[in-house]
Image (cartoon, rainbow over all chains, first blue to last red):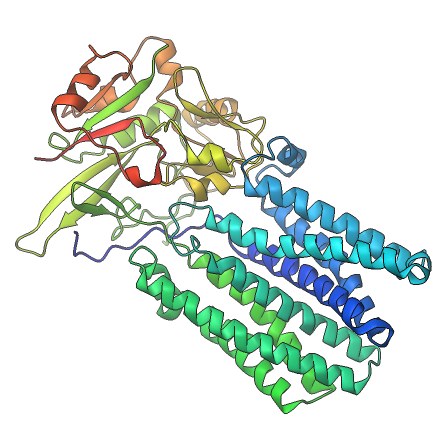
Length: 317
Length: 208
């Protein structure tokens, strides 16, 4: 095969807007799932944590969908995504996030605001809605990984590890968002400690998944340029500073030290920023597999060494 | 019904980019959009190296991945096997750009001039822009359609007509007597990336 190093064509359609959506959907779905788990397992003692989690579900995903709409070429035609739910993950995903938002809205409206009460009294109804909501929250988080995995030419995304990575990051960032808000609302210190410990475990697991993911990407010939682009290419700054330092290392250390107050807020905010960087890193690292024919490898760009000058710009005089 | 396909003889192609330019003229594509492109490959280490040009265009697959991932059904196949985009149904999500194994999908936000911003459009550009908006539209995904307008007039696709090496042959794959069926059968015709299972209808003949 070709021994010449090819500059692969980098995908340029999905960037910060989509990364912001992936991140917000992760935070919303993850926080909602965490809230439901706190409600089911913790009962009345964990009421505040649970309510914060449920409250975060709808607004985060809703804001995220606006980022999605902003990325569309024709936002006015968005309703058409309902036309073919059969095979496309975008169509399925739209159904998933709409159902999730409806369930989260019902849950929030009848438990917290403005019709607080009905679900407070009827605990089993609340649990049923919560479980269904959590299922769709789970789907909201992982379907994006499946969506990216359906892309044939981008080997970095074609892996079953991506939904796992998104899931772990979503629950972790969702928990961080809950911690920030719950702390400002005066949650018990003991509960904060427990949440910090759980998040630390999640962060360790996320580090593990990320290492396996990138190792796997590096060992696969098709996705090696992507791994190189992430580890030492143009995306490396986002990866090492954003994901590794801000998103994983600092929050992990701060959570293990068990600080409260401003320290916890800073750690969690950095962790959230890291979650956004993780999504962007994965998107920006996507490189199209070169085409092979008759023993030759062909980069997908016209002339890798001689890029066309950007059209529509005046040359320097 | 015909099932249109194309054969590109890599032994004949010498990479002159005439197909890319002819496509641009026939379809009035904006800057950066190449429905027909020429890729360059190299095998071996200098001085024992060989260079090869690979003209690529939409493969008009039988089982197109771009159609599978399209959430709105904007991507459809005509009776003669051409994969097209309905500009009124496309929402511009760019999923097909990610899904096409051959990278032959282009999402075009708006038609742009080749010339610096601020200059008034020339009459040719006015016509070009109008043509593009009418046929492909802006904010949507666009792709090669084997020059559907030219074929309606009974002419060959622009890239086929422009090929100075006569490396491209356009024809009906269903007709066993057609030139392209003959070439594929007798000259070891192959398709790009058959593993993805999209059953492309653009065949290549080996370079030597």
